Image (cartoon, rainbow, N blue to C red; front, side, top):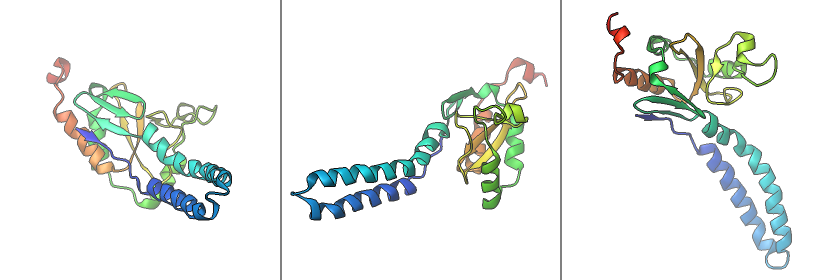
Length: 181
């Protein structure tokens, strides 16, 4: 029903610069100093990998997929029947944060497995997906589950995610206890 695509612009730029750099070194080093070229390529690879760490972690921990019965965020799966859709509609009705508000919010949303930095220790909503924080500049949405636990979900497109989640609620069967309400 919904898959949040990861932007690949930063990764493409970093990989293109790496390939252009090692290609520019090739004419001066081939064929006499091929070992030097391989060594410098490996050295520059050590610079490339940290530049790709954040996009890779976004894909692993903050990828969102909604199907007919499950909300998947990173490594977690939440049955749609466990989502409190009143909180989804409330979040959908809320205002969209400005870019500066998103940056400030992402800097303060931490759920690291360190005493004092766990969301539960601070009384903050639990970060869903398995990551330790919301990547800087990403938006985050707070919804609740049926047990009343608040959940923070990092998203790239707040409106599209909440709309898809609300539409998924429309397709959910109504349980007998809710039918009487």
